[in-house]
Image (tube, rainbow, N blue to C red; front, side, top):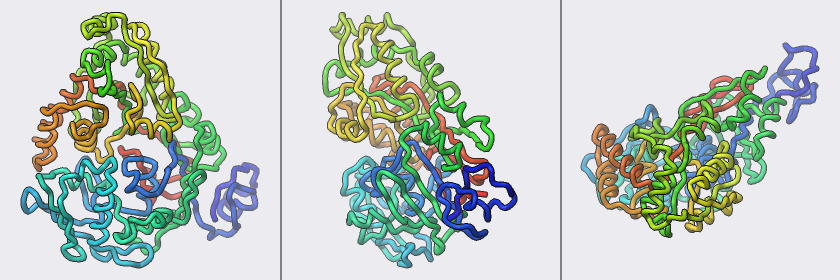
Length: 503
């Protein structure tokens, strides 16, 4: 196995491949010019599972699984493009027909067919997870023939091609088995070798892949919870790629010899939701007061610098359907006035929860908000929780306010707005029938200009109703060893490593 050495004392630089093992580098297992290249990635979050249908909205799970499993479509420049499907059409408002790529096989040699699509989508919908609302209007899926899949819906579903960019296709008759997801078999550029939940995911190149073959023979996704450990590993040549470097740690990788640092647009953002099932957040005046009590511009500038911009919409400006709204003014006096009008002249006492290591500067962001609220007579008790506990409490609505990062997975506003803010979603107690009507119309339309205008209306309603606080749009950032070539950090933040090489 190929590994680059951290020992800088090796004498013959031109004998890089042959001499690495002799230099005692980490992970070295041989000493020939033909030894295999390994690409090592240490993400901010490590996958809790490889069952991407059980965890379809978890970025860490998606990133790992997409190296070996594929989707029917892929998002490019905000629009769905071919992947396992080569084309699709909607012959009537309640039908979609997808034509599948010919000659594709799973890594075990089994042909990929429409039955695999049918089984995979049906299982995802049956689990009723985070993506299920986007597919809820599907009434039936037909494997019309080996290379044709027909979707029937109860209402027009113009967003189906976009949504399917997040639906990973496994072997249709095996996806219901837990054993399958411990070592999935897919059609992608890598095959899964092993998954150690607290250690790493190991992949090998799929030499039978239908598309461009992976440029490295091995890929490892490593579990390193502490950012300091990840940066040290990068500097020591033990890791090749990092992402999501906190703003206060950027100086340790930017401008450093042997390391290349980059930034780019993102679908990621922070939000704070109010649990509107409970008082006092069932009153829009209280929610608006919470926003006016915060100097968002100053906080974002201090904590994120050029890695964050003040949000102008419930989804980032990189997302199709994002409006450009006016941020709430910083006005503590108005905040107190609104609280008094809502029946809380002496302020309120509440709590805010967030996940440990849940995003760049998340604790500092929470503390800045808490300090600002206190000045307006709002006492907020912090509740930082381990991720597993936070996820459980979040789903059970055992919180007053919830702070977290989020991403618009498809790059289409429908992914976020229709999934989170309808009455049926029941995510935080908010319900607005006018908003539901707008979102339903946008989801059904095939006219992109109409959809964009409808999402702008929806954005404004969510913003003015203060369903949450949307303080900052985040940028993607990453750092790589300078002998890593071909890495593109997509706006989704989920890198595809198949065309990345290690020199």
